[in-house]
Amino acid sequence: MTPNLPAAPVKAVLADRNISNETLHILKKLGIQVLLTIKLPEITDSTATHPDMQFAPIGYKKALVCGSVYTNYRAILPDYRLIPVYGIQSPYPNDSLLNITVIRTQCFATKYQQDKLRLDGFDYITVKQGYTKCNICILNENALITSDRSISSAAAQRGIRTYLLPDKEIELAGYNHGFWGGTCGLIDKDKLFFNGDITRLGCYVNLMKILEKEKVEPIYHTASGLCDIGSIIPLY
View 1 (spheres, rainbow, N blue to C red):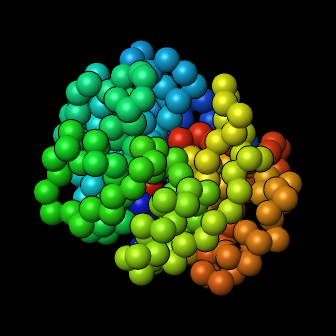
View 2: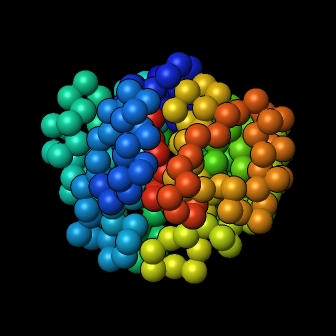
């Protein structure tokens, strides 16, 4: 599987260990195995259990993982090539080291992340936003949703279709609001799972127009508002 871009129905995902029963129920009903994150003691807020703070897919069955939980991930993903990254801790920017976004051979990352991670083989899209995975909702390899204008501008310059939508209604524990990328993840090439009720959003009509244009089917539950849980990361 290309990182973040499944070509077929997903068999397993990585999700926040604190996800709701509704989210867990829907994913399991779809036949998806849900692997849960480990809480990072080095992160001091609610994002300590977010997948996008501790696990970053960068290739086929290949990912960067937070060094302090490397052994845990090696146990649950024995056929993955896992590369430990150390020094991930509060505050920013060290907490954001793995919050990069890989779309095929392109990688959205700050200069700080690039210098620290020293990844080879990527065409870097340099942005100012340190939490790119939080801020990027991947629709397909050529399109994304974000609320961040620097991400939108940088992506557009590379020919990636970008859609700007407000994120003030997205819930995130301990913060005024969350971000688009943290609410969702592709679970098939044309199916996007959202963690909450997108129909409650003021931008719902615009969101649906975007999804219809990109031929993406939204899947969601209606038990709560849309909530940022650090992404749903497809694994297999």
